[in-house]
Image (cartoon, rainbow, N blue to C red):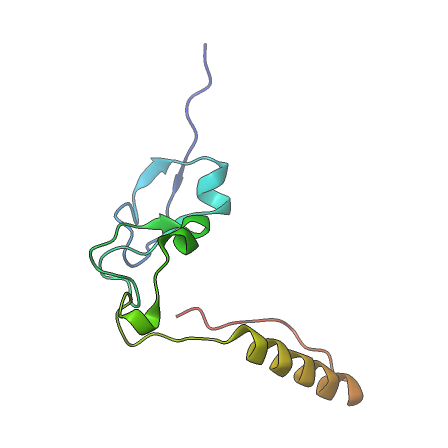
Length: 104
């Protein structure tokens, strides 16, 4: 007898149609889950959810008006410089830092 398909509860997430339902998932769904979709802040409302790896291929450009506002934009070079400064500041004072981020 074949093993039954594995299913897990998908936690509720804004903009994902299957939120809160039981669905079969594979490793890609766990490693690179679909994000975005109608109702997701900063996401083009006429676009379906996409996996993270597929987003850059869309070529969306904030300055061209491809993405709805408000939207946070982070310059990679500024982020790297701030990170380096903060790590040096903490290290000089004998402090350890725990990586974290805002999730809501």
